[in-house]
Image (tube, rainbow, N blue to C red):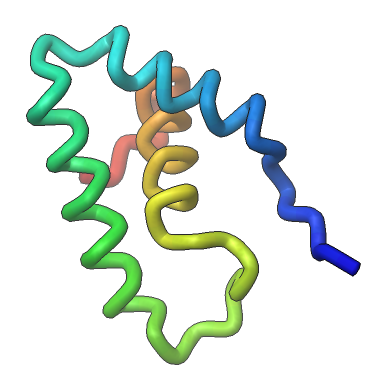
Length: 75
């Protein structure tokens, strides 16, 4: 039986598309997502926050939230 994450693939793809559409440079936003995912992977290595969510998925969700809700911008 497969575990379900909080975000389905359709929603994740929509958020990724919003990020790419809002960015002035597709390459730069892709690198930013990868860097954030890499950083979060090492920061949360011992965390049991949500082991089913991959770092890249979490980075896309966080960055799209920052895009749509500017009051929570962290980095």
